[in-house]
Length: 303
Image 1: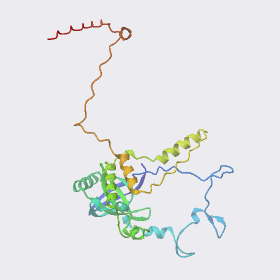
Image 2: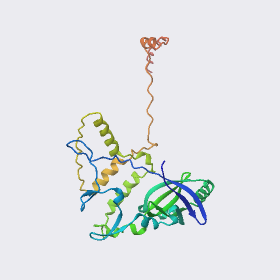
Image 3: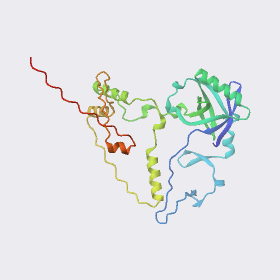
Image 4: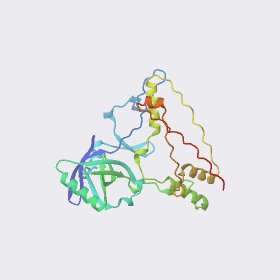
């Protein structure tokens, strides 16, 4: 793994030297824009619209647009000066329960490993957090961006999730067309709860796959091999207008087959057919003579 950050975790007066690694990877299949006429990939050029020239990296600076068309400019040194010595420290501010944090706050996950001679302090912090069931809420600066973070134990490793600041979360009140008054049909609600119950299962992340990426990779391989592929258009889904009928159909689709062990009758075992002389010879077995037929018993005299 590539180290993306080096520093230390700080809680109280304790410092734990750590290295940071990305815990996730983006597996999206990247595409480039191609000129259809000649097949060449298109390049993005940094061009100044006023000077009408291509601009080199050393001629570029950062600016903030405070009014339309008006900017204040910043040199690289000015922005770097805003980062104090704490930019290399993950400062734990509080310890809280993980269940108190809504998933909307989480951004990206990183793994933290002990650095230099910080193995003992690393194990101490990890064990203490595991035993108390707490996670640490910390501040960190990565690539000149300040962020909140959650430090927690994942298996036998400390992990860190960057989380949004509260003012970065848009309020639900901004979402349009939300119902002002909840008015739910009780029968439909009962059916919906039953459907949720039947679809409830322990979380197994391994069973979820990116079907689109798999299909796209397969299509790419066929095209690289020179095969012409025609994909049949998907059938349009019929809109089910009756909500109750849709719920009933969904429940029937996932309903398990009921079994009643008390009423189940065992099927009689079928006797294996006797082998003929040809079958016995083919199987290398000694043929046994067929049993003699029983004589019919004489009828009893009538009284």
